Length: 88
Length: 102
Image 1 (spheres, rainbow over the protein chains, first blue to last red):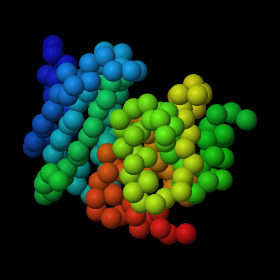
Image 2 (cartoon, rainbow over the protein chains, first blue to last red; image 1 turned 135 degrees about the vertical axis):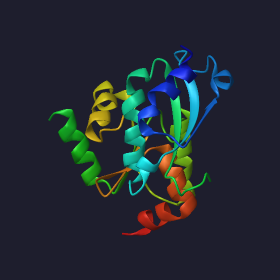
Image 3 (tube, rainbow over the protein chains, first blue to last red; image 1 turned 180 degrees about the vertical axis):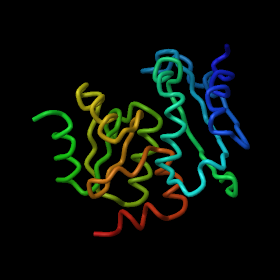
């Protein structure tokens, strides 16, 4: 499975209302310290995030992806929105 | 002293601590770079700990905050977040308020 598809599949327990994955891996290929893992920017919107701090939301995302880091995912930026929030 | 105690001592003894890869002058990762730039933009004095210099801290800090990534910002001993959270708190002005409180 492509890494991108795997990320999407793994985040399904969050019941995402929106899930955007920007793959910036090509921009960072072979830079210092990069072991070949991908660079991703993730926007997840979920009603499960309501009333939760950013720290809690990030932890909820990390729990599904943590074992992919740092080998397959080298860098991950997370934008976690509750159902009534919109992207900045 | 074990590494968890050492981290606790560091974040207790210094008001603002950033665990990062590299140094503020030579950050070794884009997120660490963003984090130092945000703290500079806030005019904050902070202690930077380069986790690349110490494998025990590099792994230990992930357990300490139950947070798998670096950088990590601590203010008054409390874990505030990583680069994404710092950026959103900076954009909302929340971070400046937090750092300004003495």
